[in-house]
Length: 78
Image (tube, rainbow, N blue to C red; front, side, top):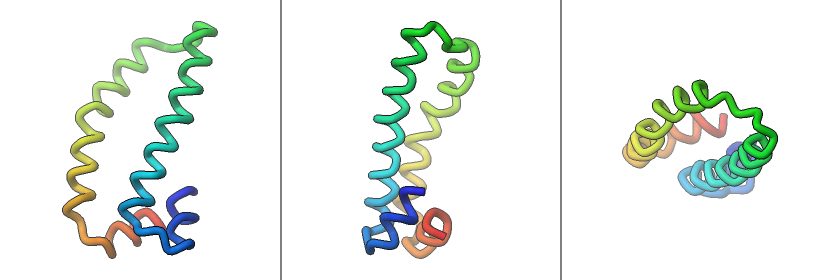
C-alpha cells in the first residue's frame, strides 16, 4: 500500500521500495517485541521464516538494484 502511495506523489520507485521496507521493519519490530513479551512467538516457525528471509533480503535488494526502473514501477506501484 505504501509504495503505490509514494509513487503517486512522484517519489522515485527505488526510494519508495526502500522506504516501505524500512517502515515494515520498524512496525514488525514493534509487533514482535509485543509478542515476545506475551510469549506468543512460535520459535520453530520464526526460524523457518528467518532461514529464507536472511539470504533473501540482500538478494532481493541486489536484484532490485539491477532491474529496470520501469519494471520496478509496474511490479510494485501497479
